[in-house]
Length: 297
Image (cartoon, rainbow, N blue to C red; front, side):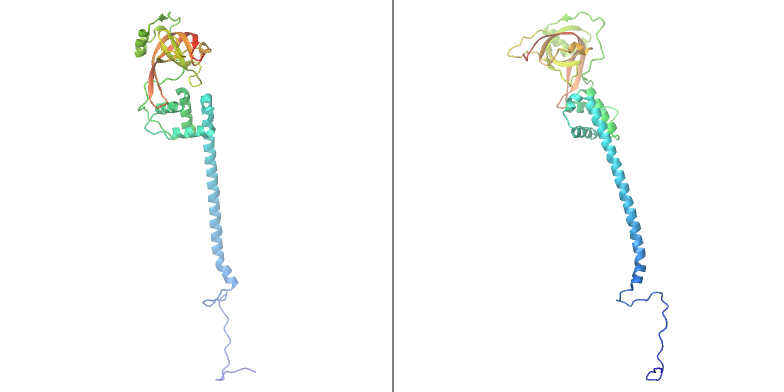
């Protein structure tokens, strides 16, 4: 028996849907299958983006690690060179302190020359300029390879005392030295370059003979005549650098010793001071020396 409407018509059967997936009415939650279809492109994009970000992060970590290894390797090389150049003075410093000193070299103003940097570093650390030169060059090579020095020094003195035996040697065999007066010595000390090659006898007191000066040179206060000790003090006035061609000549000489020396005048030399200036002194090549006493005894 078929049902009929009030008008006597049969009800129409619903037409089959042409949609593969049912369409939700506004405000209704789509069926699970439809949600999955919409989410797949989004999840795929997130996955690709995450993989790219992870690859970039790994690359950054690798590059940073290589950079750190390079810096650490350069610093280690600098520390090794610095300790070898001056084991006595730098032996008291930690590796971090030496590295900090090297970084200070890298930050020197671009207006100063390599010679200026060496003089400044030697003065600030109380180093012989020879050792300071090695350390400055090592810092530039290992820690600041982009550092460039001007070709010409702006402020460097014309002479730098190197605490090494002078290249100029006295005549062979040397002429006999002559005894001089206090006034003769004052004339030599005033203008040493005018007396180069003169053979003289001097007296004095050793004021610095340590790891900084090396074994072939020392500083002393000097005169042309003997000064007697009074109240534990010998009044020699002229700061002088004395060097030798053979360090064995100075084996028994120490700071505080009084001495008589036969020497050849080599001229004048300037070296940096601890306060950043420079001082000029006579330099003598010693061929014979005798310790006559000490202010420390």
